[in-house]
Image (cartoon, rainbow, N blue to C red; front, side):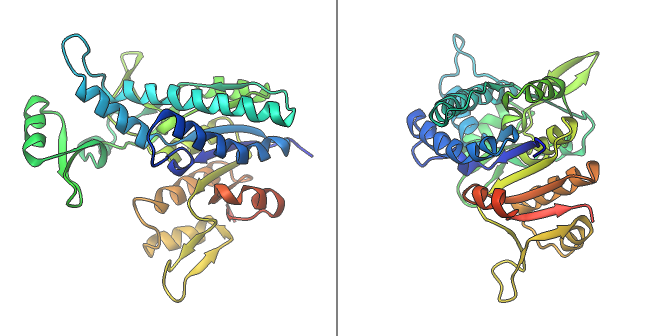
Amino acid sequence: MTQRKIVVALGGNAILSKDASAQAQMKAVKDTVKQLIEFVKNGDQLIISHGNGPQVGNLLIQQANSDSKQTPAMPLDTAGAMSQGQIGYWMQNAFNEVLAQEGIDLDVATIVTQTIVDKNDAAFENPTKPIGPFYTEEEAKKQQTENPSAHFVEDSGRGWRRVVPSPIPVGIKEANVIKQLVENNVITISAGGGGVPVVKEDGKLTGVEAVIDKDFASEKVAELVEADMLIILTAVDNVYVNYNKPDQKKLEKVSVSELEGYIKEEQFAKGSMLPKIQAAIEYVNNRPDSKAIITSLDNVKNLLANDAGTIITKN
């Protein structure tokens, strides 16, 4: 069987625990790795990306609470890099333990990934991505005064939160490094939390206050390393249209043009399923002989055995 190069994009539920302690999150990561190891046992070359929302949110709270002349708060791009290292460390350890239990001799590495965005992306004029802690209106106004470039919005009656831009990735600085590692059979963890957003200015990369959608970043990695498959893991086994209605329909094998029709019908929720669908379409359009799959972590064995999940192909 030909060895496949597969990018697996993990949803936040793969790491998230109600208990925010390191021990609880490490356990959640290990439970996830026990399922991802099925790809390795199947002979696939594995590239893993992951979300970082809860972790970077907690880091931002810690930074804000300890902000002083002696320990100034780190900016968002640096906090994103910190969370990549944190989650990568947990995941590497979990993989090393599970690989040893399975008698598999492979190396694992985390790449702190910089995701290149266009400084003229319209998202910079319209910040929409909530980050960090909730504030009272008074606290938000004080923060706004102290940092005029920051934007705060009221969030569903729960308080006020800062919002930042979410630009579209145009490149992955470390794509060649990731590709070389995978071709040498190193299980690679990259583009954590969508990667650190950077713009090219005067021949150098500069971090910006933004958050990249993890699924779009995963697509860009898959495209640039010439992956055979992009698998986006989420909370459900399949994508549905007419979701939660009497005529709901499970999508199993679906073409790009069919999905584009469903998008026009506004079948997919903007904050959850839509970006996954858009990332899958982008990948398949860029690699027409490949396929994208959207399914759940719990469905991995079934996916490998029966091609289960929502499978997106060009035609």
